[in-house]
Image 1 (spheres, one colour):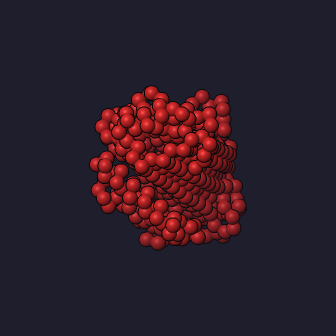
Image 2 (cartoon, helix red, strand yellow):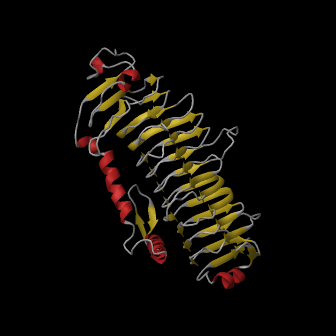
Image 3 (cartoon, one colour):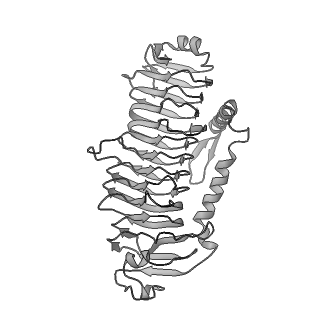
Length: 422
């Protein structure tokens, strides 16, 4: 084993990492989705997101300050001449590059609701943050209506009613919104809620979400990215009559990467539309780790890669029937799935490679698959804890040997019985 070290001191098995990467790219090539060099759009988005996060260097703009000790009749341009209320902020005609600083440790009861129609630019967003020691706390949440290129950082949201950060279902949508280093907790409904299909390109980076009545993140727009965030104890209100998830992404082109998602009600990550990317997350403690329920409106490829999924009562990865979507499942580790390690309904095409999948002693199967409409590739996986008939092909349980004969797949798979653990 060749061991390397990532930034932050994390040790990495470089040979295993390279093997998984080769499997990912081979799977994508097999599905005829991306070329051998990998997805260019992911790199493009990373560059765009970096520009948004660091865009304050592009245009310093004006500086405004808000403090409970201030006065809305002040200029707001220094801590000694601060505004007093968020109502004054909400009425301000803010321009690209402007910064609004809320006094650290102060609590504001009213919502932060930037004036509808205001907009920064991709290089000079309008930034809202805290100044001085500590972070400002928003009890009324953050409300977004027909705005774009806004960034929120170093803030705490503890909404006493409804949602934490939420968009209007009406209007032109909220576009290119950044939440970075924000804590959102104890919300009766969702911590983050996008309610407008015109919402687009939100970046949730390093955000801490905990103790929500509904899903941690609910997003109906497109282009959502959630990375390096912690999402714990979501969907706590059993009186809500529909499923509640860690991340509930109803829009297309979603990226969920390098997050900790734990103690959720239904799914850690629930996808509904095409072209999602779920990678390098730690997901534990709910019914399903990653799930897909088909609401896709166009053909795409959803990749579920290098995730660690454990302690789920139903399935590690569960994909319902998808008429046009293709799937790549590679390099994932599933431990302690209560029903299926991996389950796939009838999909357009799928590649399953280099996964380690283990189930509990009472589980139905390690793998359940309906034959895809087009292509099916499954090889180089390790299956642990399988019952005697622990492979379900086209609804028929059977042994691994029977599954191989029926599917023509399973090359270089390794299968262990219930007595062994991954």
